[in-house]
Length: 82
Image (cartoon, rainbow, N blue to C red; front, side, top):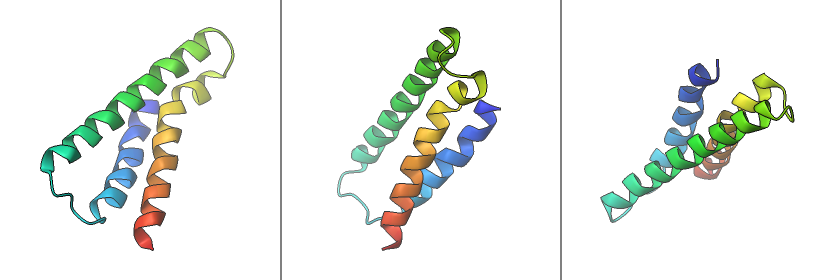
């Protein structure tokens, strides 16, 4: 379920970032995308460790990366609407 929910979070982040003014350097967008992926997979790994240690329930632990990207996407989308 966590992997199936990830595209929604990434799409919301991409829409918000896509409507902002373009950057002068196209490689900057690639670096940002790579950074988002690193953050997502880092949070996914942290969620797995939190589940294994019993700190968080399995559903919440595996949705940790999705919730963070979704929150970031909502923030970027709302910022782009202004």
